[in-house]
Each structure stands twice: as C-alpha cells, then as structure tokens.
Image 1 (cartoon, helix red, strand yellow):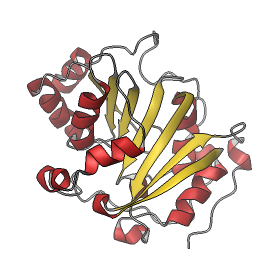
Image 2 (spheres, rainbow, N blue to C red):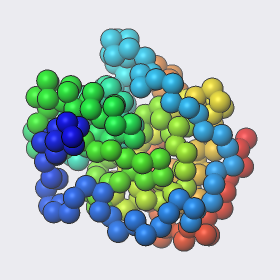
Image 3 (cartoon, rainbow, N blue to C red):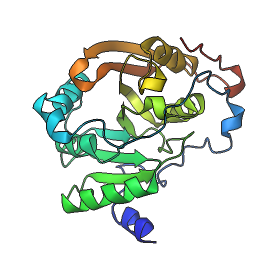
Image 4 (cartoon, rainbow, N blue to C red):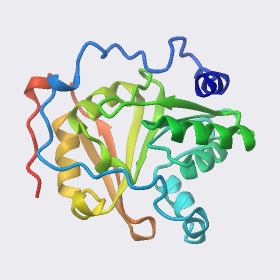
Length: 238
C-alpha cells in the first residue's frame, strides 16, 4: 500500500493525456501472440551500470542527451530507470515545462526511486511499474524514450517494442545505449539490435560510438505500419 500510495502521489498526468498511464489499446494481445526471441536474456544483476560520480566525470548523461537532442519542454520516458541516474538528469534537462516518466519492472526499484524523486523535489517526474513484455506507456505521449543499458534484459523484445511504438509522438525517437557485445556479457550486438527493431517497424536513424557510456547510442523512429504479431520475423542471434 505504501508503494501504491506514493506512486499515485507522484503521478501527475502528461499534458493532454487524460487516460491513466498505460492505456494504449494493445492490452488484448499477450506475449504469446509474438514470436520468442532467438537469443538469451541477460539477468538483472544490478540496477547500477557504474557509479553516478564516475559517469558524471566523463560527462556521460550530458553527452547522451545532447546526441538524443533532448530539449526543454519535451516529454521523455526512462525505461529501466533503476536508481534514477538518467531520470534525475533528464528532469533537469526538460525543465519545469517538460515531463519525465521513470519506469521499471521491479516494485522495490520503483519504491526506492520514488523516495529519491520526493527527496530531490523532482515535480516533473512520474513513476510507472512496467512489465517484461510491455512498457505500459500511454499512446502518443513521448518525444524520446530512453533505454540505457537494459535492452539485453528484455525477455520479450518483439512484444515489448511492438507495444512501445504507439507511445511515441510525431517525430518521437527511441534511444538505446548498450554495449556491442554478446548478451551473455550484458550487451546487445548492434546488428541484432537493428534487426529486432526493424522486425517490429522501426528505422535506424543514427549510430554514435559512446565508449565512455559503455558502448554505442542508436536512435530509432517508427517506419510504416506495425506488422501483425504473427508476421514478425525472428532475428538470428549472431
């Protein structure tokens, strides 16, 4: 009850979005409507990729947000927010007229992040508990969706990406930061990443080497119609 009450208290609606977080009209499909990925899933071993101090010393968040063209007034989702390294910095970047939705699939992580949001008085941040096959984001709400060092932990990537797509506004982008290495080593081979996004109806618009951020930054936008779940072609794991 503590988590539910705290999450509701921290849940301002996005401008123009009257439905509760997560009502995007795709709930009738289940993960089993989608093909399973032909690859392993990395276990969640920690909510921290590195210390915040070490990441700030190499200007990680500022450089990534610059490359993603995050501007004041935008609405941004931080998927797999963990302890809130990007959530806090995105909130500062988008400012009082912007919004950040911090999402994670672990209730204890959301509760811990809620304490931080309240302690740091981040009035433009809301919290959301997601699922392994569904980010549970509201439709047509986000200018940017960040997935930083977490894509390799998504257990149902085709269902997840398919349900994520309607959450983007016109011109919206998905930003992935990950390592170009095997999933067993807590990364996502870049070729596999592009293939899985393309299979669900996204187009790669840019790639940047970000070794100081642990690998690469890839930006994707929707392209064409979403395929029907049964028409999705599974990518080979390199």
